[in-house]
Image (tube, rainbow, N blue to C red):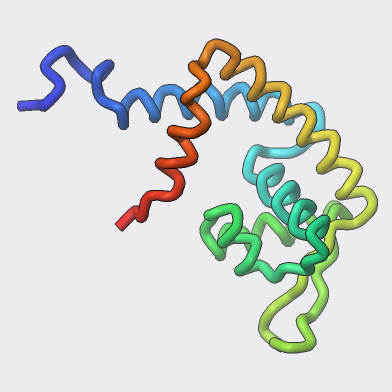
Length: 145
């Protein structure tokens, strides 16, 4: 028995799932010409933003800011470094950690990609009520436990 007798269209989780998949497909398609996956974009843009705040974050800080898995973050950052989009330097305060800095090439790509993704967002969410962003901000602040 389900608490949604009219079907999954009344389930907020199922609706979120469907909307998220549609939005992710739109973002992936828009990023394809830039040769970035969605997760590469998120981690590059996150690192770029942190660098703009005069921070030289390590992988843990980037993963925490992006809310991504630490191991996956490390792998993606390594791929971005291999492409010359960022550099990883040893942290003088922690021999196990690497500080991440976006290169000039990475910064230029991050700025282009942010415009692309913001355009997708504007088009995708154009018909959404004004209360959508505050509602999503509220949900993002909730403790998942």
